[in-house]
Length: 444
Image (cartoon, rainbow, N blue to C red; front, side, top):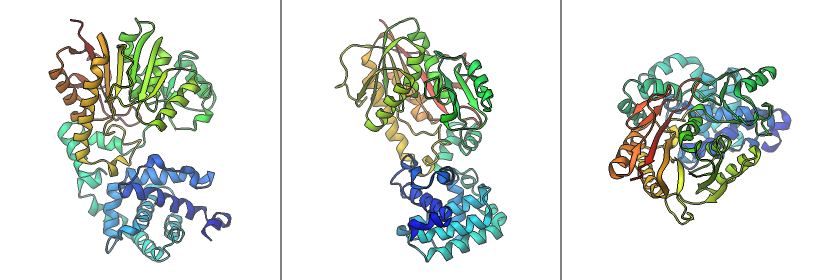
């Protein structure tokens, strides 16, 4: 019966049931939104499905607190899908422009598609109570600063400790969706000319302040309508991520044919940018075959080529023995600078993860440094705002590596000095949070 509901106008039930199913792995710490299957619903509902899932994760700490106020007792573990439905319903009522009757009725009704008829009455009662008592309930839960700022306590504490002046702005930026930023391929166009093409297509945007190839759109759009996208004229890449090419420019521009390694290269945005900018022989490695395939797809669309290897950057069994002139280490990290693009981090990341990630970053630095020729440059990058992964990591590396010298520029207009690196914070309607440290290997 449930399979026939869409034909009877029941897609509203289907999309909410699909959202609940997609959220269960996140809520039970068994998966992420990376596995969200937008094709599980009809085409017209895919945008709504994504909004329900991403929006619920973005507001999760506050939604959970409100759910606790609405429920007499928590749902059992086997009913995590019903709990997810409740969160989806609360999100619709408080954060979306969906008519209240639809948010309540179709969310409660979706429980039938999950095979749990009994839950319709519970969900209906909770959501109708929220309608009646929204202001009072929100006032109660927002007395907890972690709830009001929609962050798990450990993360808000870490931000407050690391950045006593900026922590609140970082948290607020994390709670808003990130903008859509483009990187114009200078082989085809300068960005001023491409911005004019966008304007002619009815797409508004502005030039990025710091990335020389960047344009930020006023409103995100489907890449299919971007002029020349399939022909490789433009790519989607955050402004902060585009700065890696500029930082490596002094090492690569004077050395045509430079031998370059992009370690941990997926999904390939920085890989492609380097190949667009410089005449280099690039080796790109990643330990995830599926993500490496995305790099291959990206390079194919742009008409670029690199040696792609499925390999672990903490080992050297993939290395041919020729030292690299430059290495880009875009290290695995907590992702705390890109929470607005990956809001499930709020549910999935744990305080103890940071220590393990810092250990991995140390292993990567120590393993890759000997692969760099004397006089060569290594650029260390993360999309984190936590010093343990950034400034402290680089300070420790410099202390134990006598032939390493920091050359990170401190006279640039972006970010702020953090140890021997440069830290950017997520900014509303602007760039993500990123850290960069440029290191040079001494020749003697």
